[in-house]
Amino acid sequence: MALTALKAIREEAGGDKVEITLGYVGTQPASYPINSIHLFTSGPHEAVLNIKLRSGSGIRLPEFRENLRRKLPALLPNVTFSFEAGDIVSQIMNFGAPTPIEVAMSGPNLAANRAFAEKVLAEMKKISSMRDLQYGQPLDYPTVNINIDRERAGQMGLTVEQIGRSLVAATSSSRFTQPTYWRDPASGTAYQVQVEIPQSRIASIDDVLSLPADSNTGNKARAPLMRDVAQIAYGTMPGEYDRYNQQRMITIIANTAGTDLGRAANEVNEAIKRAGDPPRGVTVSLRGQVPPMQQTLTGLGIGLALAIVAILLLLVGYFQSVRIALIALSAMPAVLAGVTIALWLTRTTLNVQSFMGGIMAIGVSSANAILLVSFAEQSRKSGLTALDAALSGASSRLRPILMTTSAMIAGMIPLALALGEGGEQSAPLGRAVIGGLLASTVSVLFVLPLVFAIVQRRVKVKPVSLYHADAQGSATTDAF
Image 1 (cartoon, rainbow, N blue to C red):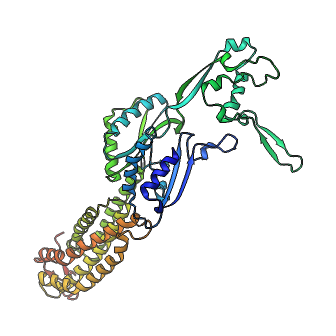
Image 2: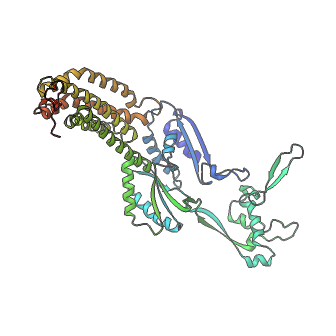
Image 3: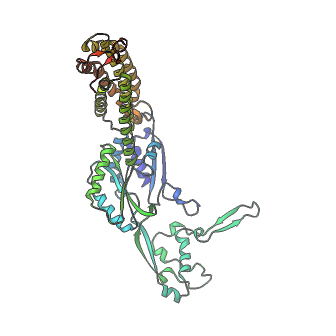
């Protein structure tokens, strides 16, 4: 099945556009002393395929994944698929989750966890933007249930321990129950010796029933078999147990398509609410990229607000006027509007990079606005009217503002176009800066002088000192 999936991926991408493929199927044989917790898969039922596309292949990953989601189920109808992050940044941002969205149900009762997880899964299937929706653990892993008849075993002189040891070689290896080492006398190197029946000879229940019930039968003519002391049937059980704070946990994993992570998280939260109240002791948490995203955006929002407050306080101290400080900050709404329009036109989400770009645009806009207001206020104090002072400040700062904005935009264009490998990750920053600066330039040169002229038209200039003989000091009379 893994080879079929790999062939389909190569055909979809084009054989010449695939540079490297790496596959890992199942688990390691019992003859290799490797702890399964260090492997990529949770059992022999799972396979991991990593594909590296050639640089400049021109393949857009969202469309590529959508095409594979339509093609692979038709080729392998009984197989579930999930596209996990291949880059190190996304893997770190998932914080241990295989996908950006992971809903975890944890509690002391695994049955209660699963019952509520089924309700949540049914509600999440109604969300059109969800992809690869499935449980994170194999909850119905196929098993072979062996029910030993202790009475019959006792009549044959067998114990449960003896029967269990005879099954070890058929199901895994004797190294798990009887570690045995042989030391090479020539080299002194110790080798692990273990007994294991080839997997090809244990392919059905009949093969298990034909095993000897006692591995130490010796030369007995008629050794009891498994069919004589046990009943064997197929069954199911959880193939993997995940715990969080010592409580068993069931997770639902999902990818998103056609929407941003913030909207998808809101829809998932609504689906959890529609599922009803969880049973007593069951805790539901949304994990993956959602919690760090919310924490980061909240922190950035608080930082942006504090930055605006800090700029306002500094301007009040510099101009000795709350009114002029607010005039200088009147261009900030235009910056935020420009950032929003730029992200909307380029279909870019509001994320950490675009948030940082917005903060950068606000900083440059504030510097331009402060300089223009400073020049305009100096001209007004020299005797010009508020309107003439505003026009004088705008004309004197026209060239520096245009040069600063042009240089900043020119430097951000390659970033916004996502040129180079991994450019899509930093492209939102450049797009936000460009949109914010374009709106800021128009606002500072055309709107800000008008605001200054309107607000300052009735403000008189008189000495700031209490002594009227002090003719050197002059400032604006503020009503604030």
